[in-house]
Image 1: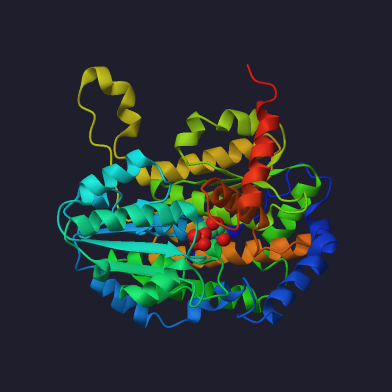
Image 2 (image 1 turned 120 degrees about the vertical axis):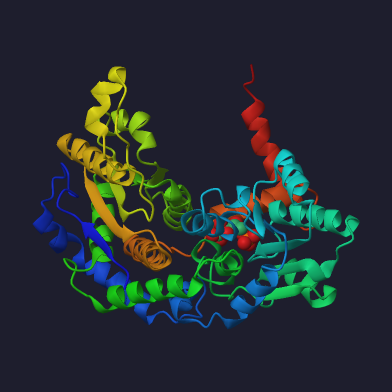
Length: 447
Ligand code: PA5
């Protein structure tokens, strides 16, 4: 069973509203949002993520087995077609997975940076390589440029379209058309699942399983969290309801930032994944709070000064891991000059991270700022699956309670169209002109 706890005792901070009044103020909106989610069919646009925990993963596993026979996997994809993979791999495989003897090596080409792409190809040049293209729309320029380049490189090496897997919309897009005619492998990315909600679909799970991640446990954890959140209707007992209410409260009082600070190097990409989910889902109609990624304990030595003594404009979520799965203890201090460090003898590094998380939370609370504390018994597939589902659910109901659509992304689409226009894609000529006009404005005062 997934084991995660949520503590809200200091989550109101210096708000004008008391913890008790929170319920009266927001309960109705949150319950309505949850009801809407429950009553929206899973095949309605954007809502497909909600049934992913219960979906059969047989085809994904079969494809993963095929992928695991390669020496290297290069995945091209960006945003929701990349961040989930980075999150899963970092949390659930060895931190230096690629540097060890592990096989297949995994490379993710997200940013279309020529130096990065060239380096990936240099490293993946040895042995047989599978190219995995992930794109819901099957047309995103950053992904397509790199797909074309890596495909060409593989063909020059004597490989073929038989070494390619695309994960894309079941009907639409250029990837789908390529899959139909090239004979490459293909997995469906369900039409009703949006990019940033797709980590528990083929988009996130195929390469994860190929790297040995236990995707059954991920889905099991997500399913148990879904059951809990969907059945518990009391705002004081449902952590997603309570957290949604807190976000609405703090946004309304000018706390425009949502800081997430996990205390584990294996969760740095979790914070990145969350940042996309939160920003792209909620930043609409002049509303939304800005997600800020922090990492404990590193950011204690970078950001915590601002967090404690800077402006009261943030809601903090600190995520602590009970057991890191590995423990290292400080040995006996024998040298005379190191004697002042004797207090560290026998101390465990993992426990120290936990103590530091507590210290940071306490320091922020002391300064009057709101803190939510989340604790995972351990960072394993089941708990991570549960946490992923929790955040997806939280984001969806918060958005709905804000009165916006948490599943669309018109701002992202606008940027995509401008890029297509500038790169000469037919049908986007007007977009190219528009960019030029805005850019003239930018350059009208140039030093
Ligand atoms: O969440 C989203 O919809 C976006 O961030 C997409 O994931 C991102 O733009 C990539 O799109 P696609 O998967 O269509 O290539």
